[in-house]
Length: 291
Length: 232
Image 1 (cartoon, chains in turn blue, cyan):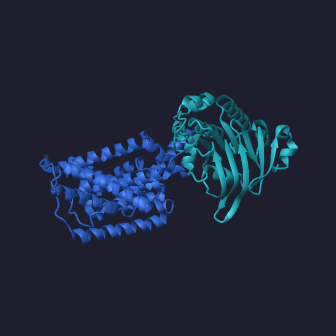
Image 2: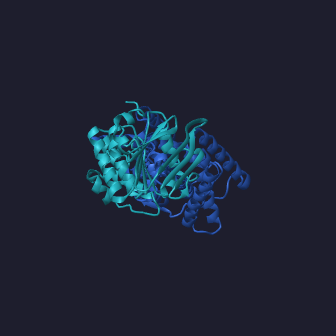
Image 3: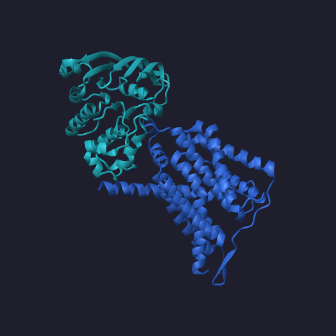
């Protein structure tokens, strides 16, 4: 494999890890909720994009539509179910597991085991005699842009400030005039919208079926565990390191060892840095300022 | 400005605050004193809406706020400095101050320069994480954060807990100055006799979740009067 081949594979893995994990990381990092329906939110985004494209809507508008609609769906789920379980981590795990089963089975009943997919757009690029998908390169750019959006939302908006404060102390935030339930609902909506976006973006690259989200689940959880609770620093560092490990092992020994490498890195990180990369960075920052 | 009548609250089925009555007039500095564990902080949290009341009524600026949520009480003009200061450690000093901007929807201010005038050190440290400040600086930050929102009533829960004695009188001077300059009404819970004597214009003494006495005038300066209500 050429150097560009490795770089391409790294970009592809990085984009996949970031986009798979970002919705989960936002919800877990800001709300402490482990959303086991994350894969099904991605699956819903893939269905919306595929069905909208089949109905004649341009692909990129369909992808934006899936982010919007899954975001609204997430808001409704939060208001109806999740909001009753704030601060009850284990209960929310059971509830989101139930939601995931209902969604997957619901899609199976409504649309059957699979639906006709849409083709990967934008064609390919030939470098050194090898062909590379332009769409997959675009996914890398979109993953970087998504991190940029997360940075802007959480670091430069009032909602972001209130969200970070609520994450640290819900009680103090409330006493300062923050409607923390609204902050949580909007955060869940944002996380769901990112999951919908991911589903929409990957719909043209994979077969769309009720189990579509399963392809993202392992990678998304490993990325969040390794990254820690900060959705920006954690997901970025975790995506960068895991993307490299996956690409390198993939190149040398194949896909199976690439995935195995992700799990081994996760085990090592849990053992050595229980708070993940973002916990380590935040600790260093606090110590650095203190000194 | 603030009237609390027959207030009752607690945790689960344990009643901590019972039949509590106090009244605070506009522009006053009033303290609530008493030994550890007699329900002072529970009362303040109930006043702020962080613990639900099971009986009684809270009237603020002529409006019954008993059923309002904590954030709505803040919007209505109550600034709160929690016990242990309650700063957000990973937010910067400036971000902590901006968090105070949601208090008092009617009198929005958000002018950080005003609080920097009272606490100039915070301006120098505005980009520093709050968790890296000393105890005294965190106390100053917590008071400043509440002031950014331009509250009508400032509620402080043991503001000097865990800070050096020289900083206690600094905080006390500034709170009195703010009361004089801006006319903010102050209600504070405290056990530090020196601070109670320096700041209070009137005291309510609490025991077993109730107000058991009111101390006014020269009695506040009388150590033996305060001592009977405090474990010293």
